[in-house]
Length: 120
Image (tube, rainbow, N blue to C red; front, side, top):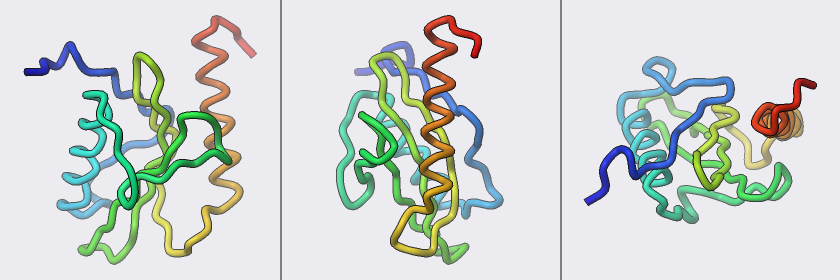
């Protein structure tokens, strides 16, 4: 049985998941999906979609929120020691907005610089 110390750390680079704006069930579903990722499980379609346009090991969780009538996107990257969440946003179209893609790229790059000890 896994203990919390066996899990990867969960790091939010900017955002959070809470009710509101998430509906209760959507928040629970997103928490369970993130827990699976922390435990080393691989999640595939339709819940998680690869996002190579953002970078290697980057994906987006797709959480349907019937209460709020929206589908939430949680952009994350799996590293050896952590699951990094770069952005959480509601999406009503099929295509991810380019500004969200660029924002996630910037946040992951900033995290990587900090982790390597760089300041800029």
